[in-house]
Length: 137
Image (cartoon, rainbow, N blue to C red; front, side, top):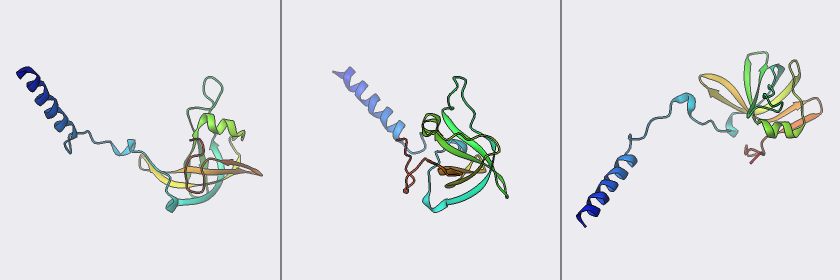
């Protein structure tokens, strides 16, 4: 019976140490998740200078992104899961002129955009709803 009491106390002590503030490791700034913020939504236009690259298997990569050259900057635009972007059927290649509506974020100290919608001519790639929630979920 004493043995069970010892293990019980050791287990409780372990739980207390794990849940104590500061006992968990701190997540570095560049690894913190970023969220679509309706307060930072903007619409920008530019030319694609870094189109989403196909994966080795020929499909889109796990996370589809592109680089957009605007009048002010080159901006990374995160589209969403490659399978979802590919399923929508819009092909985006270098030198395409597009318009992106999305939430401006900072990634590793650099500005970027979480895309909600991409327009290319009369084609529209819808990635998020009006509340910013991903359409792939």
